[in-house]
Length: 249
Length: 240
Image 1 (cartoon, rainbow over the protein chains, first blue to last red):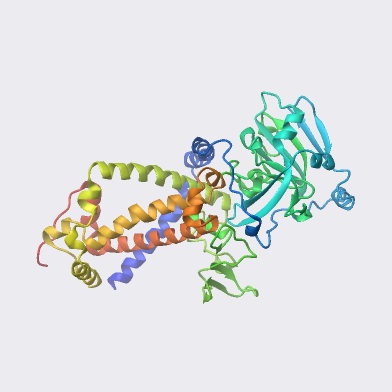
Image 2: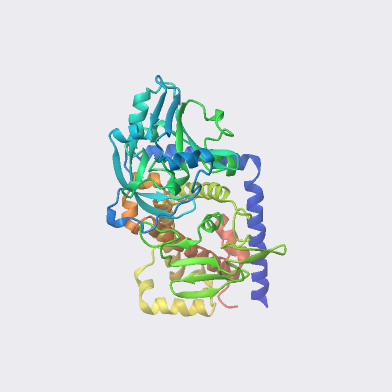
């Protein structure tokens, strides 16, 4: 009798606390604090992790048997269908914004540049991980060709896949952009990059969660202000669902 | 709470570096294919959990999701909000935990009150304490002013094992920290192992909290809570 009454009180208390917690967390100042922690976490991680510290690289024996494809598995537009049929012979990667020489590069040209191959682990924000091998062009080489202006702060990736009418996009800062493992991949596990993984070009930014790894990339924009893109939060999921811009955790 | 919200985004646990839908999960919460039953699977063991886990009802609507609305923070499904609250909690835990640890070592709370003395660790003494707990026989008089040995061991386990493990495995899931502090991955045997251990340690903490609260209630909540906050503790009389 006593125990059951106590259990009832404890249960009631827990319910009130959790509901109460949510009420408190949703108030302006607390929510603002929680949201601003995003930047605080980034600064803290940058403090203890060197700029060029490499993500772990694995052996081919450690590859995931099946690498889950998530997000858009295709960019389902007539234009993309045509590019796919043409084997991306006419696909162009444009580099614009705060650069000295705007570029428009065919995929074949990227493939002739020095490349990097890495076996890395992909961590989705949902919690799962998969190991794959990626070959691509280091982003820093492309940025060097374009000549980034000194006021630049972010690199925005424009994608061909749509969610309804909204195109996917993502952004990273210059530290991650110039990181040696940050590449625009055109090969996966030794094969041409499959459609479901973002053919013909997908970003690999290995110290960030999966939603940063933009697929179907056709444009790179160098900017000093993320407010001019999408709804202004620096990425499709950041705009749509409040995902954290800093995806290092 | 917020962790369960995050877990709900991918309600499966693995061992090793990688793990996704096509790989073998050692724990999974799911709904049967016909959508009629919720279940929890651990290894080859499968328990039906309809109503609580995997499939549950809220306001007359049945939802296929691992943990139910009344356990998660926020109560509706939102991975990004769950993560936001989780990291707020993580920072509070890390800062408060670090301050507490330093202060408890400096003022000798750890060595004076928490470390068991040699006689307390004798099998006879331990067994006696287990029996006393099982019979809900609480120490009276002067003895009640000190932690008993099971209590000391539980506190030490939480302070020096579970909480550090929670923090380390939390950091071990961060791709940025993996680049800087790869030793965490080696310590736990990979990122998905770190995720599994994070969940298990959190589960152990929940059990600790439940038992702890129960003990406070049974030992006299007013007196106990007052002593926790103010240090004033009324000794229970020797005989009831």
